[in-house]
Image (tube, rainbow, N blue to C red; front, top):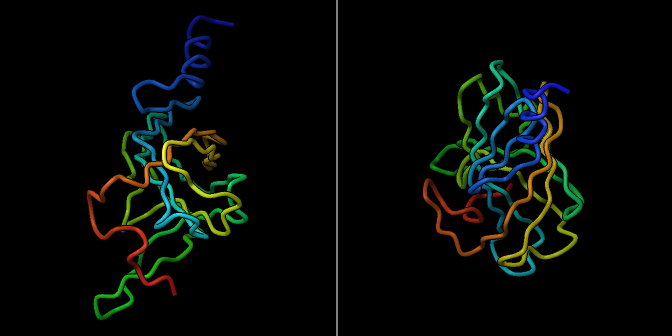
Length: 160
């Protein structure tokens, strides 16, 4: 194994200051998960996904044992100022060198049919699946106290 390969493999398993690195250098920044209330049947995860691979990629899925179903969700304008969440079957394109923000009121990872409550301060394990970079396991802290920085708070949308 070359020194360069060793560095890449080591980077794949290292978490530094809220950023997780995957082999191929997909970088996850400031991840957190929350639910709208205690014992809620749904929750969501938010983060920045930076593509440092040198080639365009797509986040095509996510999975976790904390929910019966995990989907990539986005918001669409249903008219009359009403925003609706929907499953984005095509995933989230992330151009080489760019960052795609998964945030409240926008794209996010949605947990439906939670098998356990999202408890403040605990950590959940989520596998993100990229079209080219493959699977990446991310340990995400639960932070239900964090205030929304952009858009509406999660849980204030029309879920129909």
